[in-house]
Length: 67
Picture 1 (cartoon, helix red, strand yellow):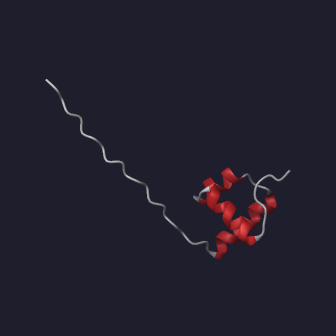
Picture 2 (cartoon, helix red, strand yellow):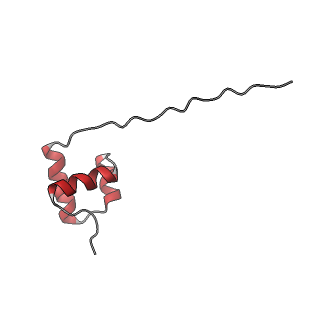
């Protein structure tokens, strides 16, 4: 007897976009000054590393450990 397996339809995760508030920007600047690692900032703010790096770039500030 053959048992047919059901093919699972892959669900593509949609990205949830949240705008940066003034408080978010202030927090990002504080982390920049403290040289907090980007991975740690990402977990605290619940944002991706790429998102944080892009925002820091537009603000003209550095993020994480600079050598």
